[in-house]
Amino acid sequence: MRKTPKFRRVILPLLVLALALAGGQVLWADEASASSSVDGLKVERHGDHGRPVILIPGLAGGPWVWQQAIASLEKDHVVYAVTLAGFDGTPVPTDGGNLFDRADSSLLQLIRQQKIDRPVLVGHSLGGTLALRIAGEHPELISGVVAVDGLPLFPGMDRVSAEQRIAMAAGMRKQMESATPEQFKAQQLDYMQKIGVIDPALAARYAPFNARSDIKATAEYMAEDLAADGRPGLKSANVPILEISPYNAPDFSHPPMIMSEAQKTAYYQSLLANAPNAKVVSISPSRHFVMLDQPAKFQQVLDDFLKTTERSAQP
Figure: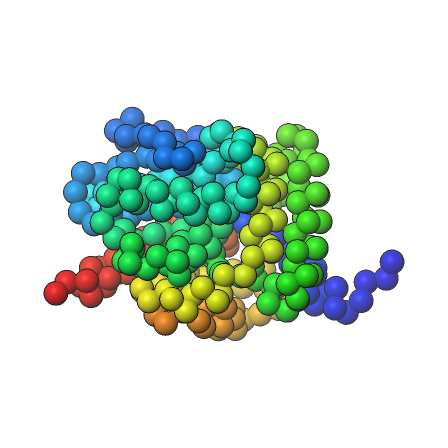
């Protein structure tokens, strides 16, 4: 069937960007961390004093993605690095229901159960989308959000109807959940090489462990993310929000993805227009895993945000 211009302008970029919520994984354990579970949410606690920070990984992710950030943050913060149910070897929920809703509820339960005093939520990709959702639902429970290439609406989905989003999400779910473990590994290597990170050595290092996550759970999270539109909820998100937009010029220099760094930043800002206190900052050269491609730049931006929100919270 001949592809129409609309397919090239909208659907093809979406299929490319859809991969950008998946992630490779590296086995990492910190013997000094305290590990627990809250409603299927695996929680690692690092540090013993300072303002609390909750780190939420993206699709199929785990604490490995925050390794360098944790080492820096735990000196002056209590850090909670979480893993969503079904990811990175954690059990898949067996009671059915929407996994996005389940993750949202589990994160809120963590904050309330552990009596975490207005943490800053730092989420990568799908984790950033969850953090933004919580900011809109319960801004009184948190003091800010840093979303790393995670948005209230999947990029490109603002150009299609809700019905089209749902249909595309169903197709993506069917395609992803049919993969064998070997196919899943191969897909993740290809993804990490082309979208995840710039350095081929990093791609080779992280990609092989991606299959630790449950394939069907990963497909379900992905489909729910594609179908959702969290923009209306941001009207109530009256906390500081920082969106980190990665940019690697060669990736946006040819059709159908021609876009300057300033244009990409402006587009991300448009998707956050309903949030009263949202700002977008670009980090380049970087791909989806900014904290792996540019760990020093990422940490500086994160530290600056934490300092700013700390000063604004003081009487």
